[in-house]
Image 1 (cartoon, rainbow over the protein chains, first blue to last red):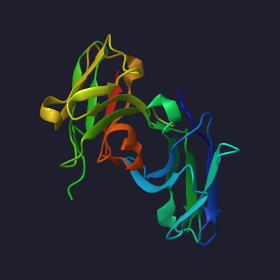
Image 2: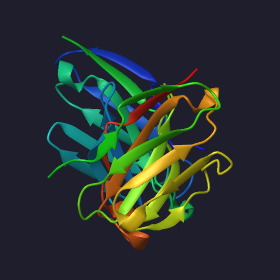
Image 3: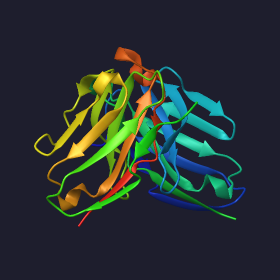
Image 4: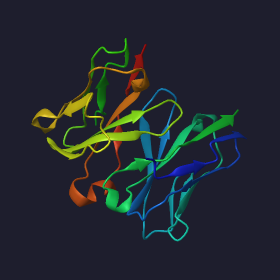
Length: 111
Length: 118
C-alpha cells in the first residue's frame, strides 16, 4: 500500500514560474523525503525533513512539513526545463519499518 | 563515489519464463532495497536487507519472487515463473542508514531494470 499521495498528479508550467507539489500521508512519521525521477532513470534524493522540523531549504527547493495535517509541500522556485521530472514523497511510516513512496507528481516545465 | 549498478538494463521474456536481476550497491552501504515500479506509479518496496539479513519481505510474492544478498554486498532478485503483471521497472537502492535510524539517510537508486513480460 502507498502511504503518501501527491497532488496534483500532473503540473505544467512555464520556465521561470514556481512549482508547488503537495504530499499527504496517513500515519505518524519520523522523516519525510522528496525524490526526483527523470524519465527512464532511477530516483534521486532531493531533501529530507524530520518530523520535528517545519521547513527546510536546499538551493531552489523549499520543503514544509505540517505533522498536524499530515502533509508536506515541495516548492521549486524559478523553474527550469531541466526540472521536468516526476517528484515523489516518501515516508518512513512510523511503525511500519518501511520507506513508502507516494504516487508522484509529473512536472513539465515548458521552455 | 560510484553509484548503484544494476543489470540488465532491459529484459523481455515470455510469461512462465524465469528472470534474474543483479544489483551492486554503493560500497559500504549496509542497507539494500528492491522496489517494483509499475508504469505511472510510485515505487513499491519488495524486500530490504541489512547486510545479508532480510529486514522486511512482507510485500514480496514469495511463491514466485526470491532475493538474496550474499556476503552482504551484491544482490540478486529472481522471478520464476513470470506473469504478465510483473511487467515493471525493478529498482535497487542502497543506503548508509542502519537499524532503527536507517531512514535518516537518503536512498541511492540505480537506473533500474525494465522488465516486459509478453
